[in-house]
Amino acid sequence: MEHIVIIGNGIAGVTAARHIRKLSDKKITIVSAESEYFFSRTALMYVYMGHMKFEHTQPYENHFWKKNRIDLVRGYVTKVNTQEKSLQIDGAPNLSYDKLIIASGSKPNKFGWPGQDLDGVQGLYSKQDLELLEENAPNSKVCKRAVIIGGGLIGIELAEMLRTRDIPVTFLVRESSFWNSVLPSGESEMINEHIREHHIDLRLGSSLKEIKPDENGKVKSIVVEETGEEIDCNLVGLTAGVAPNVDFLEDSEIELGRGVKVNRFLETNIMDAYAIGDCAEQHEAIGNRRPIEAVWYTGRMMGETLAQTICGNRMEYQPGHWFNSAKFLDIEYQTYGWVFSERRKKETEIHFHWRHPKEKICITVAFDKDSETVLGINTFGIRLRHEVFDRWLSEKRTIDFVMEHLRDTNFDPEFYTNFESQIVSKYNSDFGKSINLKKKNLKRIFQIA
Image (cartoon, rainbow, N blue to C red):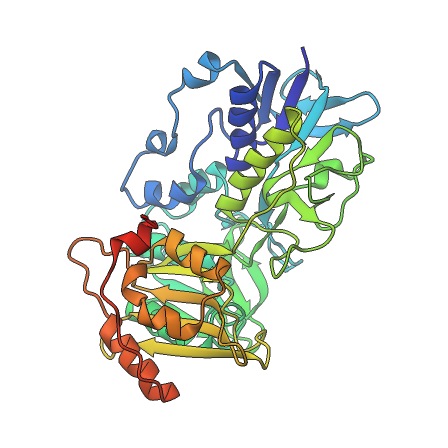
C-alpha cells in the first residue's frame, strides 16, 4: 500500500489528507510537533480573549482520525532523506514514505534585532505561542506594557487581544500609515484612527532598534530606531510578517528559495516530493499573486488540488481571483480582485472611494482607466456576496455595471444598514455619471433561469 507522509497538520496538510482519503485507500501519516490534533489557527486569538476554549478550535472529534485511517505522529522532523525516502523525527522513530507532502507552514520573521531571543519576546502563530502569551501576559499586573513590532494583520490581532486584558499596548509601525503597502490611503488612514480610538499607542514611522534585558535576562524595554526613545515593557510581540518554516530541509536535495520551490502542480524538483501552504513558493508568481501566499484559503485549495494529483488525476493549482477577509478590531474587511495601494498601483488604475461621514465604513473600487473594467473592490464594514463579485470579475464587468447592480452584491445580514444609494450618489458626483440603482434581483444573484 502506497504510504503518503505529510509534514504539518495545518489547514493545507489536513485538507490534503482528508481528500486523499476520500479518493483512495492509501496509507496516510501526518507528522506534527505543534499539537496532537488539527485546530483552526485563526481562532487562537479568541481562546486568549475568553470567547472559546482551545478544544473548541478543533473542527473534528478526536476519533475522526482513527475512523478515517489517518495516522498521527507527534514530533519535529529534523531531516528529510530524499534518496532513501525517509524522515528523521525528534520525538518519534524514523519514518519511510512513498510520497512526501511538505506542509510545514510559517514562522515569525526575525531580523537580527539585538535581544530578539530574550524571555518575553514572542510571535503569535502557533499553539505554543498562545501558551507562551498566557505566561508572558496573563494580566496587567504581570505585563505592565506590551510593545508590538510590525503593522500587519497579526499585529493588530495581538493588540486587540492584549487590550481585552487591559494591558497597555504600544504599536510600532515602520510605515507612515498602517498597512499602507496594501491599503489605499483613505482606508489606511481610517484604520489609524480606529486603532487610536481603541486606546492603542500607535507609533507610525517607527521601527525597532534593540530589545534590552533586565538582570534576569527578561525583556525590560525596547529602543525606537528613529528617536532613540526607550519604552519600558514586559512583552515584545514580533509580528513583522512570517517566513516559510523550511530550515529542516536545508541539508536535503529539495530546492529552496525563501520557501520550497514548486511548479504549478505543487511538485518540487525531487520526484514524489510536494509542497503546499505557507511554505510553498511558486517558481513564477501566478498573476498578481505573491510567489508565497500565507493565507488560510489558498492552503486549503492547494491541499485539495494536490490530493487529486496524488490519487492519479494530475491537476494544476489554479487559485482563481484573489480574495481575502479579516477584522481590524471590530471592523470587518473584505477584498476581491486587486485594489493596490498608491505605492503599487499602475497609472491606468483608477480608484473610486466612499467613506461614511460618521462611522468606520468605506468602500474602494479599482477600475481600468480606458476600458472601465473593474479590477477589484475593498470593503470595510460592508459584507459582500463572494460568488457575485467573483463572477463579475470573470465577466470583466465595468464600474458603471457594478454601481448599477450594487444591491446584488450586498450580503444583507439581518439588522445591517445598506449604503448603496449614498455610494452611487458619490460615484455620480465624482465621475459626472447618472447611474440609477437597480433593485436587488435574486434571479440575477443566483443565476436562476
